Image 1 (cartoon, rainbow, N blue to C red):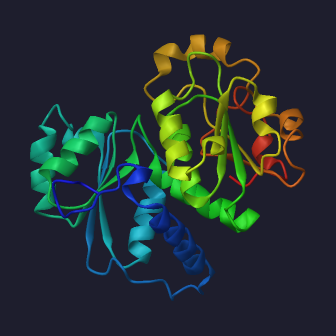
Image 2 (cartoon, helix red, strand yellow):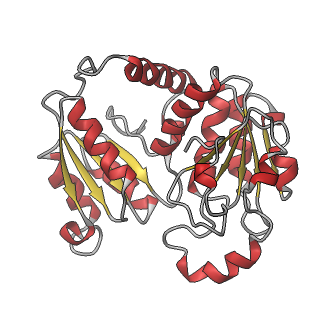
Length: 289
């Protein structure tokens, strides 16, 4: 929650309490199990701006469809239409959009842009991806885990790969629902100490969060094995160095066998086949995302 305003924003998974996180997962489960046509009309008459600096397939479609199914209307604004911070200052964009819409969903190059939108606008701002966090992705992931694994408390998720925005949000969200988080990354690409410690504080236990360099150790006893691309959008100039650094971090059948026999594999998509996953990995029977 923005401390300077009564308006609530969702820029980080930590902007909602552990109790709210668990409640949202349960409400989402209930809504998915409800017969079509009985969805909650929570957005009836509401207008939502989708402000996207980065390309998207799943995030764009899921927001547009979800908003419509809940009775609202979405307006898509691509990078060429707004020029966030270049054609117009972020502060001006925030003020203008606040006069037209009820909410801003932003997928941005810089997390600072989200913070400016929240500071200068008067409507809720939702983070649809920044280089620092990807909170909506992780909320959807928690729902998926609950669907396939049941109760979240006591489950373990192992993340293999770059300590990026997805890994950071997982580290901060999983302890809030009683899950353990283990991450294996090569030296130079590990999650920062501050995020790891914050995850431990949220979970109330030091042993809830594990960070190291050994993928086999990370996936031991895991209920979920998760990975992401080695080179995220915006890191393309580092691609060849990353390909070398991440050798040995591919999540193939052999690594997955080191987790629980009932473990599932997840990827936030889209994958780079032949890098973090082998070709055909998403057709594996244990894969759920």
